[in-house]
Image 1 (cartoon, helix red, strand yellow):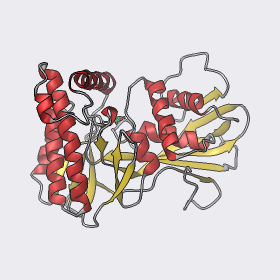
Image 2 (cartoon, protein in one colour):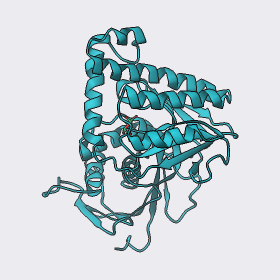
Image 3 (cartoon, protein in one colour):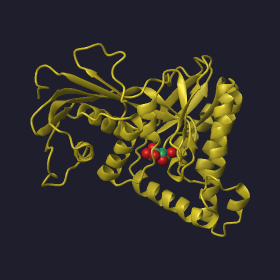
Image 4 (tube, protein in one colour):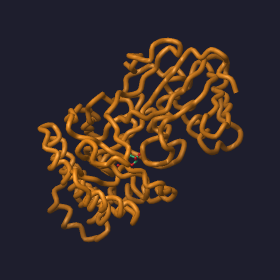
Length: 348
Ligand code: GLA
């Protein structure tokens, strides 16, 4: 399908990889992701009263009206398009094309990137935080998984050369420089995350149940958590409370260039996600164990929701020649398609 011949708008949103702080965002804790150099581009021309977008991934086209809910259930990636239309309520339609450099469903926030790029292409014009919240609502609407806001905030707030310390209560984002002698690598296990949705909702519910006993997990102490009588709730809450501490330790250590301490926190985070939060898999554990035995690797852990997907490692440059090294990159932006792609228009 054509993009209307001469695309006039291009919007890009990056995926993210989380260095540390998983399953902390939806209880108002802290996390430390980076925006990836990989992301999703939506290019096309506004106009009309339908959104028609084709995807380079599977050569399918989604064609939906802007002003009423689709009459048949929407499946596949079109669910994200329908959800974004509902959240943005665009003044006019759009004809264009979606392409991505992100692996899909690998735990690198491909759906947040799609939703944010599409919202920008459909004319969203507001502050980054509002865009992140809109995309979070679109994710809830599209797939029914009660995700937190880390992925969306990382995608809109990305900064070249910096990790993003996100306070998921105040939603403040503090940029923490990543030292030049640190390399961030991603190992994609290729393991499907098919069960992630229901298990994710179950983990979130357990955290909320624990908080009913000990108060907000962000403020709870490890002693508070140890007093929980239900062993499952105790383990879930122990992960969250200890993970928040590890995020703080890692962010401070990263700022002073102490990569060994960041790495230790990452390994400890993986053990906690494996043993207390129980979201790892034997494949993820095997990759992390192999990385722990590799010279030049400071730390490694599963990243994102778990149940498959990717491992992130912090290492000396060149330590993992077979893995993908990524640099912390800029956040989402929209530009005229024919214009320069830098610096672009960031959401206000
Ligand atoms: C998914 C969710 C995020 C976050 C992570 C786990 O990526 O979308 O909100 O909860 O899992 O840290």
